[in-house]
Length: 65
Image 1 (tube, one colour):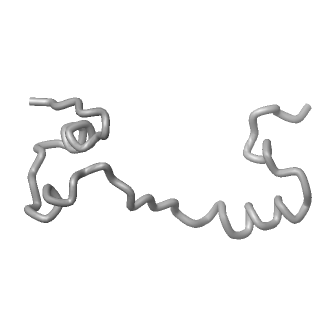
Image 2: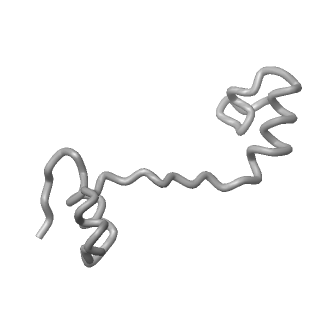
């Protein structure tokens, strides 16, 4: 019996299977986006840890101390 939530869930055609498994599956996904203000990046601000960097730069305005 085929599993419902497998790696081929959204792949319908043979072409989609081939493209995904032969090319897309083997490359890393790199996201260069961040929510830090440019001035903080420019001065190389040190946040202490990744959580503080992610939340202090978030658009929602949460600040960790």
